[in-house]
Image (cartoon, rainbow, N blue to C red; front, side, top):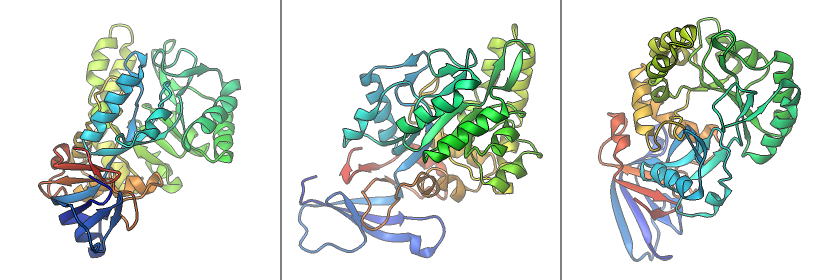
Amino acid sequence: MSESAVLHIKGRVLAGPVADDDVHDELWVVDGKITFDRPTGARDVRVVEGWALPGLVDAHCHVGLDAHGPVDASTSERQAVTERDAGVLLLRDAGSPSDTRWIDHRDDLPRIVRAGRHIARTRRYIRNYAHEIEPADLVAYVAEEARRGDGWVKLVGDWIDRESGDLSACWPPGEVAAAIAEAHRLGARVTAHCFAEESLAPLVEAGIDCVEHATGLTEDTIPLFAERGVAIVPTLINIATFPKLAAGGEAKFPRWAAHMRRLHARRYDTVRAAYDAGVPIYAGTDAGGSLAHGLIGQEVAELVKAGIPAIDALSAATWGARDWLGRPGMTEGAAADLVVYDADPREDVRVLSAPRRVVLRGRVVG
């Protein structure tokens, strides 16, 4: 689209989830920005019709990472392009060992909110992914990643303990509380990978802002999350892999395998109970490790399957997620990052997996 070109989105523009004022019949894109006022003297107008949403958000993915560790720039680029073509225009990178800052200078690639590199206990996480340290060094490493990231730090809160043969918490409460306090002092929020039950309450009491996966939530800890406003990103399409993981590790770690199966079996009940209690929930896929990128539509559909109303599941990947990450949606003067569909996603969220048009920074890119 040339500098003088105007993009005209017609149909139903879903700028927000609730009020009638959030739904518009049209908007225009002028010089890469959204306006709801018809421009005068415009030429070379391109019309796109359909149901428009803000660019989707994957609130838990990993650009620059695969199952074996860091990847090269060309692989990172393919990952980002895959997300973009799926309509995902804002990524919360929940831990990567690769430097992906160069993506910020590419107008054709999604925006990324980074959490720096994972911080894990020694030999208590996937090889080549994380800084592997002991508790005495936790505050220093959290401070380093708080300075490197985009307002987030990622801890590994629990992992398999080879001595006990099951999941267990990685950090003593005192050290993790001091580390979270240091991140907050530096203006960063902290999130943690957690599968197990026992790791959750100490992290919330230490001041954690978010928990990834959160499969170990119970009737005892869900009220604590709700009271403190601690968000979760359930990554249900990742939790779907638990039975396969359990089968692969059962011979060596039968307790862990049985635990993983139990967490998987109650995954939908866990998410619905958290939603019913008022726990903030956002959509993320965990793409970039063993899962492919571009699957946010499937994740939103999983949230609906868990019992979350469609409008709230949509918000978890659009309006609500953008607000949580401090990024604009479809508002006057905002950068034009939006996705257009052939049907109303509020009626069937599965249409998210088939965008008609993707507009990034005011340009039609897909």
